[in-house]
Length: 282
Image 1 (cartoon, rainbow, N blue to C red):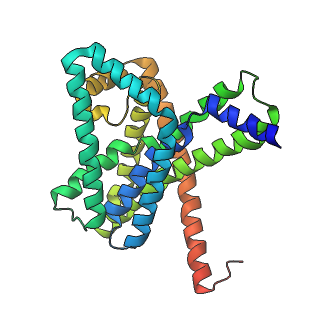
Image 2: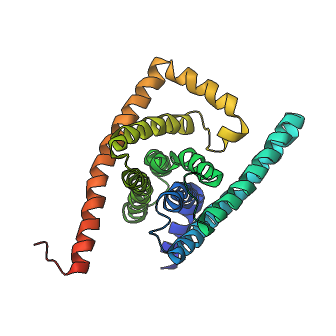
Image 3: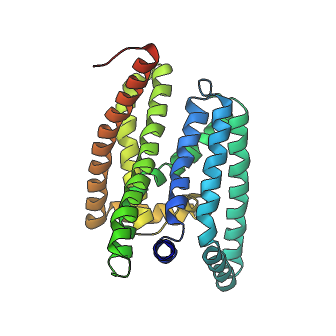
């Protein structure tokens, strides 16, 4: 038994380094923001607070194995990049602190569509939303981690593959529920006709974001730290044939999977409602 546990621990230390929990944490940020912005009045405050604490713990656990590498990277950038790089790192820290404060205020208060806090939260929501469907591309970690042949087959079959399926499913479901919360908000405010166009626009923007994140290695906070660089790269990508083709295929995948998971999610919601009312769907 001890050797089996050592095999599992060694495989996780060599391959994963906390990426699953960290990526899920980033995927759950727009989900939490969607409840705080679009369904604040119908969501129990205690449930939001408990969920926020759980997601924060997931992010902390996921960051711990990567923290030494992140710190080394920041130190190297600050040392080699001069004052400009140091100012960018300082600005990033300021943005992180402000985002945390704003998030706490969003969940403590009930921001309206007319308040500046609501609009700032909306910007954060769209900035972090591509992180949720981004988990679909993390299948590459499974391929890279298991192609070396150093991990026992039973660990791959019984642990890695189910773990990947669960992580990808949870991340994409966060994407689906986030957009559904926005759709409910639009419907409640008499903008039902805008739901489908906005859904398609979100899929297109997320397809671009996934390409920038996976291939050009941008992050959500690069929009604040280096907005001109992100815009320049985005325009270059959209005017190049191969990246545009990849983005278009990604858009089709997101739209198709979203439609499928949307039906499943709404179906489960309906089943839960029937169960509470004592209705037998069979």
